Image (cartoon, rainbow, N blue to C red; front, side, top):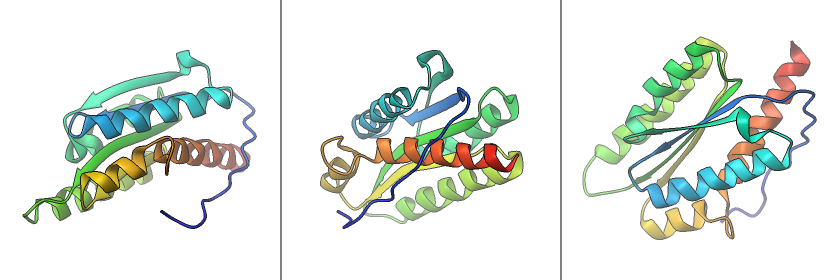
Length: 157
């Protein structure tokens, strides 16, 4: 666990629309992060009707679904949740690297912020700690990052 976490100042002047994509692989961790993110968004005055959930098979597929959602212009931000657990082959590195790169490409090519909530863990114990609301609570962290960046982007516009 990290010694410190970032602090966010969030001053939203409007009700943003947020898409949340969670993967089916290792969904027990993804669901915990997703529900925590939704709870956090609601705490910060994002109405439930402005939060739309989507599912995709795995982390490798997150960029294509993110791209479709970003191009729809229906969302101000997209949050992606997935969990990749290291196995015995190089597959872990390929999925982790390419999904992260793809998410960043979508964000930069569409100007719709896409947030990488993909856990890359050596084992299920690490995933549990990072996803758990009572421990590292990555779902909350990613949601707060989304709100903070949306506020800054609005300030720049």
